[in-house]
Length: 453
Length: 112
Figure 1 (cartoon, each protein chain N blue to C red):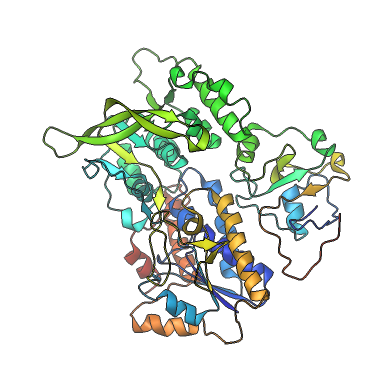
Figure 2: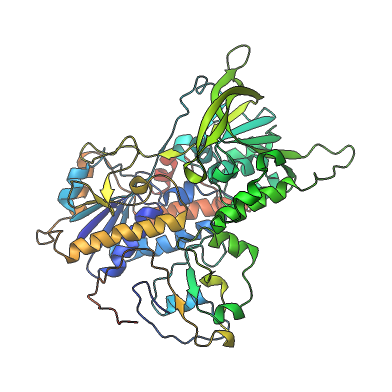
């Protein structure tokens, strides 16, 4: 049986891996819109978290295996449609993730100086579509809206000593921009309280231990919380206890004459109302926030505006309130409210032979282990359907054989995995001179030039 | 080992082997996404008592990552951080049942 996977991030690769492992006859083709594979492992994981990217080695083994093929530079929904893929394959799995972000929906959101976290992360990670972001880092105070790991990643990249970043795979141009950055203070602002933070303890600890930056947490935000988490599940308890411990620590002694250390802090129960413009109206200069109170508790607590407001001066606003999937093809049902493809255990509702895995299936949250388990779950559905006859594998399907001619007729030339390995080698070679694991190529045209396309 | 479908898989290892690599060498479905570098929780396993208590306690970095593992239990450890020693003789190492059971090769589990 021939299976097609759309998207070459962790979801795509783990789904492919599981199907290949448990079905000795399955052939799996992985399609990717960019020339280069690996999705958020390459473009989302922070440059200073290289160990998280080790999973690329597992994915590389899968891609190189006999029954697996990779086709980059193919945009499903445009270069080839989902119905065309369904004609060519016995099963199609959509694992294309979340390429967009949620919007604040407040006035001033589009002022210069306001960026989505997704675009900012894409920028420092070399995602081609964000290479010209040119974020303005000339202000002293940055505000990040959101209390998740992406918010912490950005705070850390903004405040990390440059010598630490220099040895990572952060793009050269981002490094240059950060070298000129005036940002000294980063506030992470959330609508709810400490018990609702979405970031995790490893990343928080990293921030607390960041050299040259001190944590500013208000003990008043944590009154009574030690008690409140006494019986909470272990992860929430440990995380809250760490925040409380941090509020009790004495500020770092600063030598007379030394530059004030960089600082970061958490602000709670503040909901953004408006990004305030500078006098000439040309850029962001601050933000007005509604103070909130909490109704309910735990994960389902709601933030209700109290009527009071607060203004904070800042020249850089990063909106880190969540990624969002987009519909791919009119033939694929899509729940625009939840931003996912309606499905049951990865089987797309109402469309036999169509499956989904990863963020486009469950929503854009979770780390690699979450996506891995989820992808295995979808793969199980595919395997069950192959075994149980739900998927009719008697008609032979041509797989890439027929897709190839469709792509050629549309002037699209796919990038193979060995093509990617040439791009990979070029990036590693360029990085070597600078002591970096790689220097990412951010221009797709240059990628194609390297492989002679 | 007890695999994700509840099947018992007896194995032998050498002192100093880590549980993740041991599992993988015996074809068990244990992933090590970050390759034993304490950057993920994919090698999450449960270790039987009294063997668990004989092991050196997990360090803070392992505890932080265990917090992210689905179906966390009191006897959870990251396989890549557990090294074989005589203290683990006869231990039962169980892989968490994170996905639905499906016996793709038609196997029927032994009652246990």
